[in-house]
Length: 116
Image (cartoon, rainbow, N blue to C red; front, side, top):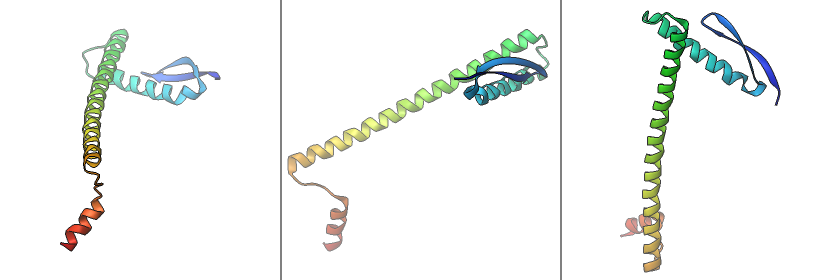
């Protein structure tokens, strides 16, 4: 893994950062996001000190990260619940097949319905 020196622009200042070469695109995206958030905080006119701008921006990004993580966990839980419901339906169908010895095939049911 080659480590390279990269330069990122944040609020019109250049910062030299070392990172794995393969991570450069992600570093550039992260720097662009930080620059965007810091510009938003600055443009609000409420915060002018560079250190405070950085802290408020970092807090905003961290909040958005945890909010996205919470939403992802909610979706994963819903998916797991739905998969569980589908597994229960499949198991019920398998149990019914085992009890009756009859295998239900949708195509056969359709054909029988058409002939009756």
